[in-house]
Length: 192
Image (cartoon, one colour):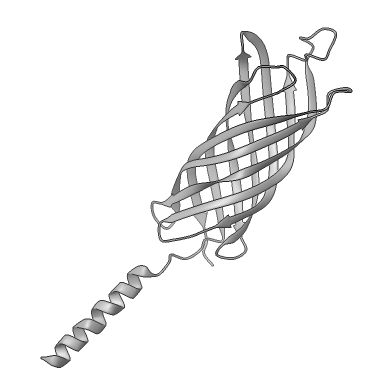
C-alpha cells in the first residue's frame, strides 16, 4: 500500500511539472492588425482620428527577445469638417521583449523608422488645399498582449503605443504626439 501511495505521488508530481512547462517559442510570428490612431498635430491644429491596419513580423532570437518589422497604413477622409484625405504608410523596426508564460505573452517594444505622409490639405501652402507628400521620422513605444489559441494562432486583444512623428514641411518643424491602439491575430511559425 505504501509503495502504491509513493508511486501515485510521483505520477501526480510528474503530471504537475509537465503541465507547468512552457510552450515552445516560435521562430517567427506574423501579426495582422486593425489600428486606430489619435493624431495630435500640434501647432494650433485640432486632433483627429485615423483608421487602418498593419502587419508585423517578429523574428525571435531568444525566448524573450525578438526583432520586429512593423508595416502599415491609415487614412483619414474628413477631420474637423475639412476634407483632408490624409494617408500614411508607416515602416518601423526594433526590439520586442516578451514575457512568455503559458498561453499569455505580454510584451513591450521600441520601434524606429519613418512615415510616408500624403494629404490634400497643407496649412503651410499659399493654397492650403494643395496636396503634399513627404517622408518623416517616426517611432513607437508601447506594448501589448498575445493570447494563444493553439500552437499556431494567437489573438492580440490590444497593443497600445505612444506613436511619434516629426514633420518638417518647409521651414516649420513640429512633432506629433499620437496614440495608437491595435488588435488582431498572430500566426506562429516554426519553433525553437
